[in-house]
Image 1 (spheres, one colour):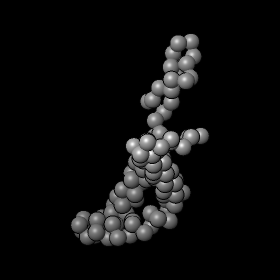
Image 2: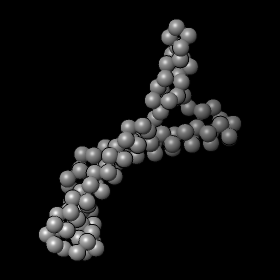
Image 3: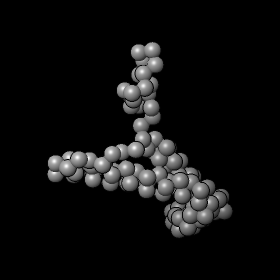
Image 4: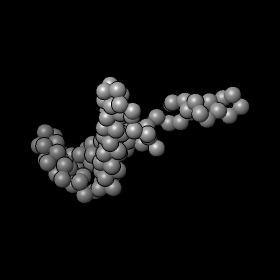
Amino acid sequence: MQVDRNDVDAGEPVRTPPPGGALARDLALYTVARLGLLAAIAAVLVVAHVPLLVALAVAVVVAMPLSLFVFRGLRTRVAAGMAERAARRRAERERLRAQLRGEDPPDSP
């Protein structure tokens, strides 16, 4: 949690969540969902008397493309979060480079 020093209520700093918190949650959720899909497919195959290693191999091949369709909304949230984070890092890098060159950094909104 970061402390926003401009927002102080009765002497107590207001804590704001760190940027990227939603990205970390979405990325973890997407990873767990894909692994769950893989486990579910492998379990179905094992119940159908397919050897475990073969079931895992088939589950990996089937779960990869299937997760693109099944978890489309979550995947787009992760991609949007990663793009937003990359844009913030790019802007911060440009601000720091301008500061190192001795230029006035552009005003941030």
